[in-house]
Image (cartoon, rainbow, N blue to C red; front, side, top):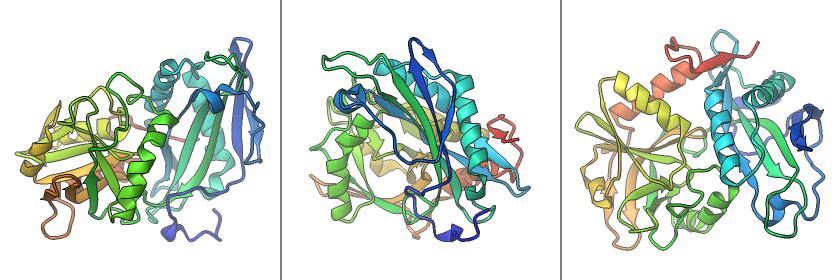
Length: 340
């Protein structure tokens, strides 16, 4: 391990490591994985990634367990989602075998940057797929570049597993119901930037977007999925413009196993007043408990975490998921795979 890194104080951000990997799709097939120590790529001036948004990415983590072994969490689901994103914007799909080989190589090549157990940090992995071939007319490229880079990270929100405030913004949409909201493509994040930066400037950690069609239902919670807890029930939105979160999928399984009823359905804004606990969940943050949601238009404030701490159900779910990821508890679901 790199002893010069202050593992316990890492932010969530880019961190230069030793190697990344790349692989090209040319002439209808994927080539061999190339290892590089450069942080840069050469890209054609007319590449479709630059002009028409042919781009998709994933976020995932590698964890060093109590036993010193490195675990990858649910990589097959990330691979499946990248394939879905590729289909959605008409890019070449990365096969599971290539995806896994690239991830494993990056982790092994940068093993000294996998944070020690007990620091709360992990190695963040960023698979990236772009249209590298040139087009000036609006059409898909005939060449694609798949890359994976990695870096150690701390919590996504600086508060860590502490309650945050978020803001409902009705004057922005993240994605349209029949658009790219279910895909992990850069355009969705670009569309969220103005609302997100304004929320930060006004003292909030993230934006709670509403559905673009009617502005009646909860959609995404900034870069994460939303969930609420009430009446021993885990409730999360069902929407045609929400990214299917692998963390949320995992929390639904854990919630059911803890004896909660699980509901995935439209959540009207007014229902926010009825939840005992609410949170945002995703790979980067795992769970960010929410202590207050303010509607920017009506100035209605929904308050949670009465004692300033995350609620008991959110805490139990967070601890259970982290215990599986770090190898502290058994993994009955086959979610983690050890890097040999």
